[in-house]
Image 1 (cartoon, helix red, strand yellow):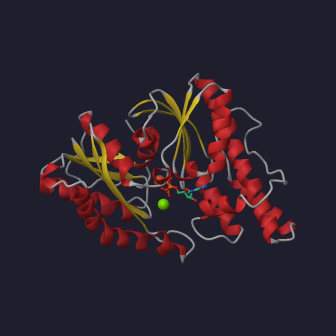
Image 2: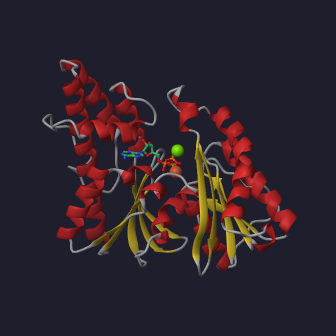
Length: 334
Ligand code: ATP
Ligand code: MG
Ligand code: FE
């Protein structure tokens, strides 16, 4: 079955076509980053308007690239949440209308389930069950995954998400938006001399907290000479603290569940140092690490097409309503 996937939850318009047996047929991404960077962050109203402009042409292009007429599409998957309401509505309304026109089922996909399943698009996908660390702009979640839709939340961030921590720290260092990749590049020029805290690692449990790192970063910058080298050193120390904290918690999650497979996904899973420190950790635990290709770490249509295809094949579909749910805890997914 051919499934068209549509992602518009935030600032990227993603479209893809996935086939249940042949795999990914085509995928296109349009990022609004350049437009929002002028404002230092995502402007919701501008995001919605740009999705309206870009989405239909991208769907046309995606169909052309996979040489499929619309009539070959067997189902349409769209991100229904969590995300920005206006942005979600563009994808949901377009998907629902196309599904009506083509008389095929539509399926509302949870954005974080999309991220979680993104490594399934790679050559050696993980088998169930596994532990998943989802680290993105809005979420930091540790999930025990038994199968599609069988997710048990093990831990989450009590305040800032990992990506948010990267973005805010980058802002303090005078780097542009989104700060994650920029901070990471700067960190390569620095030495992690200052010891940043490893929040919540000194007590049991699998929850995270990253907001304290902001204050620590601010104080460290203020106490430094504020040279380029000082900033690079702060970036390196911050990144190392996040990487080690994530690694400590993931090790705990593997030990607690007895599982030997760890999946990382979401924008922050593109980070080289985080990947390196988790690679080291899993080797010591005799476990395996799985992650999506770089372009599928951040938002994309392919992960939505994949997740939607799995759910449609399991017999699920959405009614005729345009379903959008800006706040949608992954624990409420069945
Ligand atoms: P959510 O998925 O929680 O709704 P989102 O969709 O905005 O949030 P993603 O697109 O998955 O998040 O990821 C974007 C985040 O990833 C941003 O915070 C960005 O700074 C961060 N990020 C991207 N690349 C890197 C990197 N190399 N190192 C650190 N952070 C990164
Ligand atoms: Mg984004
Ligand atoms: Fe995302």
